Amino acid sequence: GQQLNQSPQSMFIQEGEDVSMNCTSSSIFNTWLWYKQDPGEGPVLLIALYKAGELTSNGRLTAQFGTTRKDSFLNISASIPSDVGIYFCAGSDRDDKIIFGKGTRLHILP
Amino acid sequence: DTEVTQTPKHLVMGMTNKKSLKCEQHMGHRAMYWYKQKAKKPPELMFVYSYEKLSINESVPSRFSPECPNSSLLNLHLHALQPEDSALYLCASSQEFLEQGGTGELFFGEGSRLTVL
Image (cartoon, rainbow over all chains, first blue to last red):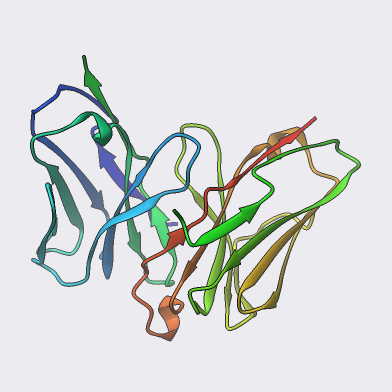
């Protein structure tokens, strides 16, 4: 089946730094979604993107739907401790299924 | 607080037991999903119900049996599971399934952590 390649796998940053992560696919996706999952909880939707080239913000988070429809990135500005967690990109494929990338683990160094 | 409620939060069962996981949403969503998530892995789709009908079954073994009694409830019946079935089982809902013009925005519950001994 289709796969999403998400990078980096993990990040170790200082509080206050900006963060960038991305997702690529070998085929076109119609929708890109970014989720965050905290330990012991289900994923929570952060940003949804529906059009190629679309740039959307949600507070300190900004995400873009790539113009080729095969990639998306998520930026977090001025990271804070509660940003720690696993960030998943997800996309809807040609079979109308939502599939997930392998996740980016964000760690904030004390 | 999530608007998708899953029970139980934790379940330990033997390989010969029969148990069920339950999921409830009151957002008026017409699509409901079961995902399985192993440790340090992304969620993997198991089943999709749209308007109370099974739309997608991702070749899940028959020891997992989904049921959608009404548009607010989704169950996952478990029977003769294997230790490798131990995982976090996530229920999600969306306003509509993609095929019916939905946006793909899924709302997840907190999950039921299953351990099979």
